[in-house]
Image (tube, rainbow, N blue to C red; front, side, top):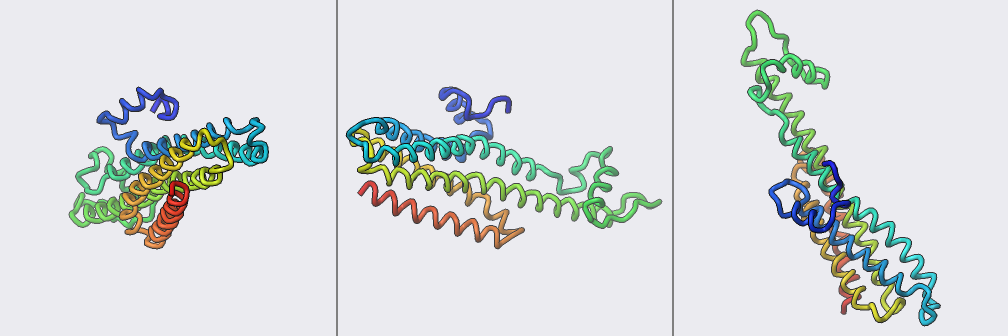
Length: 245
């Protein structure tokens, strides 16, 4: 990827999103949705700071502006983090799992690689490549592939989880601003909150999509991620309901 998705213009991004390319996808869209919410929070703070009418909330809005700017940066990074993580998972699923998946001229090198990783594969003797050796190779290939799928799936789940967590932090800021910022822009706070809530719920699906592969290798990790998702969703719903009434 020559250009990061976060640096392309809106029209190009949307064309890529709607194309047949594997990325950007739903995870990137979730991050961008939340990023717009964080940007709106910054806008409201900028239109509050320096106005005598809201002098008592000056420092609060300065703090909110600074925090929202950091969160915006992380959410923008989340657009590309999701695409990168998806690429790694796709590469893991493309790994060979059968002897026939290995190019003939790569068999010896592949056997040595698998041995270096701790797999037990018999030496090829005068009998040549026996069915037993082929089975040993295939068992090793399947084990390697499954381990790599699990490893990359953790990263692919962590990317949208980070979007959920950063979105929740921004949503807390939006709730803090109500009644403490420029009242002419209160509707923008609501739009920010809805964008962040949508980003959270959208990113959830991208976390869940990776959990089955993680659970096969590390049930505790998958359970921990599910718990984090549940907690974020619950707090986000509480904040949004309280903010929007």
